[in-house]
Image (tube, rainbow, N blue to C red; front, side, top):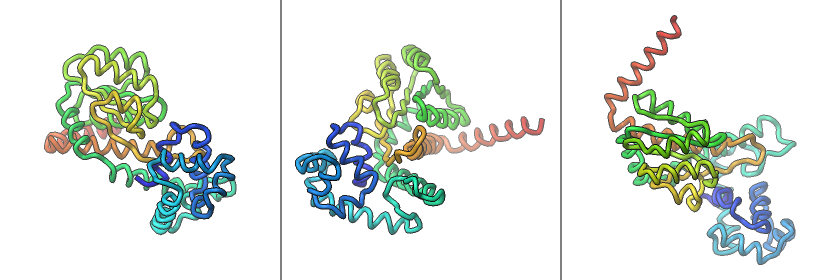
Length: 286
């Protein structure tokens, strides 16, 4: 996982003095490359000791190592996205529309790349096997995560799986409490701390259901209550309404799950997709 993505994943758990450093680096990661540790501390209105603690909090030994890692990362990504002016910096008021959307597109491409590159294939395979064998698949998320849950439910329904996307927290927890048959419960939360989604998985687990968490934080309440944890990697710009980049990362995992399930019964999947496509085309002709 890249340094910038690691910062994005940890920022919500950092104390205020370290969170200010994270915010400054997220806004302009080149600040680290261009500044001494004293200059960065002054820019963030904190102390040199806090900068050192920040480095350790994101798993880096010290400021010198952070500068080297970020310089290498920025150089590599600038070359990868050479057409993106100011890549790595936040969307700014003075950016043209072209520059703003190019920055978002670059972040979305990186989110897919880093999410798939860091994906634990053994965990994915176990999740696919449990979904494939389930009599009932419950999916739940709040806000933008609900849209991702609905996307996976739609895909699974198209190939004949009993997938139910739950839109209300009470409905979700009630359905999870029934524990009917062989059930898989899938919860979506980028932060991993959405109370309703965590409670949904906790309830499902008490009834013997298999729980799957799709989250950006491996050290979160959602992850701790999941039998299988699928991690997203995303740098979300501050200028957003709901999830943008993190939603793309979730969808990459959704597609990976669906392809895994679909592959296990390839012939059946192809026929099911053909039949549902023909049925909907017939509806349009009517």
